Image 1 (cartoon, helix red, strand yellow):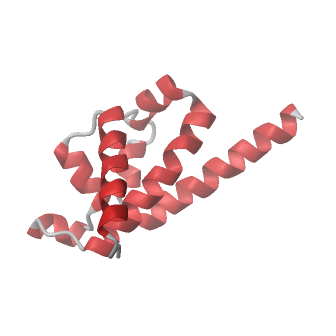
Image 2 (cartoon, rainbow, N blue to C red):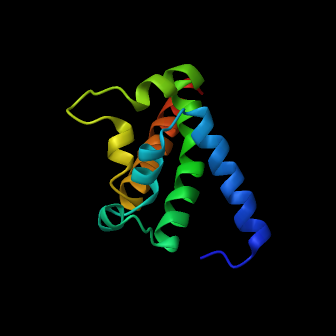
Image 3 (cartoon, helix red, strand yellow):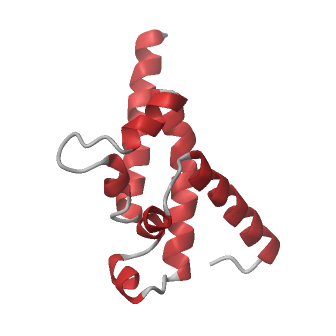
Length: 115
C-alpha cells in the first residue's frame, strides 16, 4: 500500500482521468477497484484497490494500441459472450493481469506479422 501521500495523490489523479476518459459510473469504478465482499460492505481493501488501479492504468494504453482509442471505448461495454470486457475486468486483479498478458501477446503477434 502506498505510504507516500504525494505518490498516492498522483495515482488517484491518473485514475480519475482514466475514469473520466472511459465515462465510468461510480458503480463501475467500485466494481473495478473493490472485491466482491467489500462491495457489499461498502469498504474497500486499500491494497486490493491500489493493485487494481495500477493494473488498469497499465492495461489501458495496451488496449488503446491494440484497438484504437474509439474502438477501445466501445469494446469495453460490448457484450460478446454474455459478459462485457468491463464486467470481466471487475472480477479482480487476476482477470486484469490475464487481459494484460493476452493484449501483450496479441500486440507481439501483430508486430511479428507486420515486420
